[in-house]
Image 1: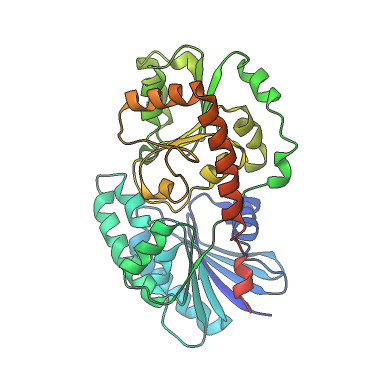
Image 2: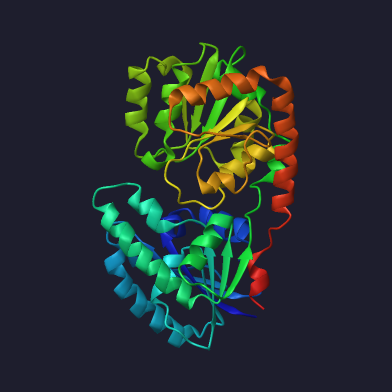
Length: 372
C-alpha cells in the first residue's frame, strides 16, 4: 500500500456535491486511483470541510475562490505541512502544477505532477486584473517545476514550457485516454438529427467551454459567410454564452446556431457522429492536447483548428486536418467549403486522423503505475 497526498482545486464543488465527476477525471482519465492505496485529497474549494467518501479516501477542503487562490496558497501550505506530518505520504500528486509551488522539499516523498495546461497563459487570456495574476502564476509554475520529481504532460508544447522553466527531472509524455469509448459504438446520430431537424444540413461542431479564449465568436462570424445549409452546433456552457447568442442574432445566423448546452461525456458521441466538420478555434495557447480534439479525430470528423501549439501537437495541415493561418472569418469559411467539396482530401483526412489518434492513445498509461 502507498499513501498519496493529492492536491486539487475544485471550484465546481465536485468533491462535496458531485463526486462522480471527480472520479471520472481522477480515476478514469488520470488513472490515479488504486483501491489498495490510501489517498488524502486536499483541495482549494468554495468552502471549508473535511469528510470521507470512500474508506481509503479522505478529503479536506480549503475555502478560497478563483480570484483569491494566490492569497489562499499561504493557508494551503500550512495545511500541506500539517497533513504531511500526520499522514506521512509516500507521494504528492496533482494535475494542477502550480499547487506544487508550496510543497516543502523532502526526501520522504516523491512529487509527481501532471502538466495539462499553462495556467498562467489561461489566466492572462481573460485580461484585466487577470493579466497580473497570470504573471504571478508564471512564478508559481517555476517554483513548482523545481519541486517536481516526475512530470507528466500531454503535449510537446508543455514539455518545452517545463524545460524553459528549468525542469530537468524525469518528463513523461502521457496523453489522456479517449473518454467513454465503450459508448462510441452505441451512439446514434439519428437522435441528434431528429432533435434539431438537421436532415438537410451540413453540420459544424464545436465542443468547448464558452469563454473568450475559445474564440467561438470567430465561428459564428464565419457561419454568416457560408450557405444556408450550414448549421453550427455548439456544445458547452460558460460565461460568454449570452454574448455569443447576441452575436448570432447580430450576424443573422441565430436560426443556424444551436447552443446545445452542457453534455455529459457519456452522451457526447452522437454529436461527433452527426458532424461533418469540427472547429476548435482557441486563441489563447494554454492547452496541451485538448481532449475534445482527440475525440473528434477518433470519430473521424475532419478538424479545422487555430494555428497554436496545442493544435499542432496533433494536426498537420492538409494531412490529418486543416490549420488556420489567421483569425479571419473569410479564411475559415473558405476552408470549410473547400474541404467539403474535395471528397478525396476529406476521406484522406479521415483515414490519417484516425491512424494518428490511435498511435497517440497507445502511449497513455495510468498514473497509479508510478505509485509503487
